[in-house]
Image (tube, rainbow, N blue to C red; front, side, top):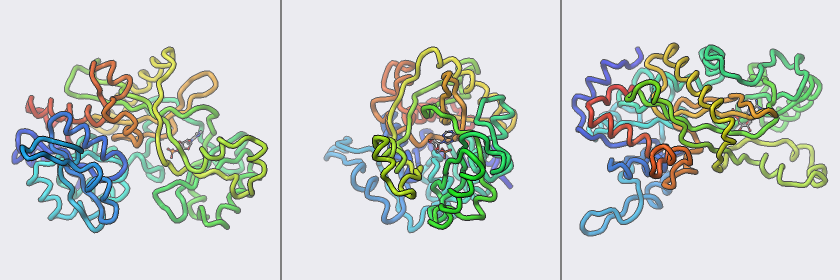
Length: 385
Ligand code: AMP
């Protein structure tokens, strides 16, 4: 059975007044740790052996003789042979003993099975535990259904390869690196067939994944990832905040678009097919006349999530959009948790978050601020699931 509010409330009874903030050491863990210590909370990062140096060495908290922070923001590093083991009963007990509230990032929901997170991980999760699953395109109850229910514009689905009548993007996992993408574009059924055959032969995708791939209209426009925050601790009208916007650098797509057309044409056919491996992020702001549209979409998302997955979205979430030629955002992906690109606003804050709070407000800090406020008011149960 899914872990419910009553069980989390019972676990919280044994927690200290001010919890520590935990996260899996990948994705956005530095932002989470940085935010935690800025708000005076201890940070605990759970690493996997061999992937731990970033946290255990380079961002580790170093203190002077008096105990004052000299450098770094990762207060404690707990290392595991495999990430999935952080959900073992012993590890859960240790997390509870330490009073950790856990901030889920995409690495957490990728390396720890969703069933385990929903039914067995008895550690308070900061945010909407039950909504992590909607990111899986293969699930019936996925984000497309939520977007549709909310009336949020998203790229038109194309029913089958034969129905491709314009530039389309085909979404499926990479054949070997299962957490990465094997996306490709095609503008006709014939192009779909040629490209998919080539990608299967190259070992980039599999025929099985192709059979269930999502095909959708390719929105020709810039990508804007909107990093929102929703607080249930304030009146509904004040609950939604836009903290900042990021964009991605994708390998080797970004390499390709930096080449002049003549040089692109000299590449081999295989080199011309872009990969969508996210390797970094940049920060953006939005033309002000489009902002209201973006808030409208955010509000619709909050309302639809509350209706479909009570208590709904809590804390950080990210709507990934392409802006069409008229500047209208079309949501092509949803993260019902901290987005992958929030490190761009580490410490300096997000442009819009800073405008709201009058001081640097990154997503990590906003999460920690919410935890601190809820703890002070005895309302932790309202932001944890
Ligand atoms: P995703 O895995 O859904 O986050 O998408 C990865 C990348 O594919 C995005 O960063 C975009 O560059 C691109 N993308 C996804 N969906 C679309 C779309 N419908 N139109 C244009 N580009 C898209």
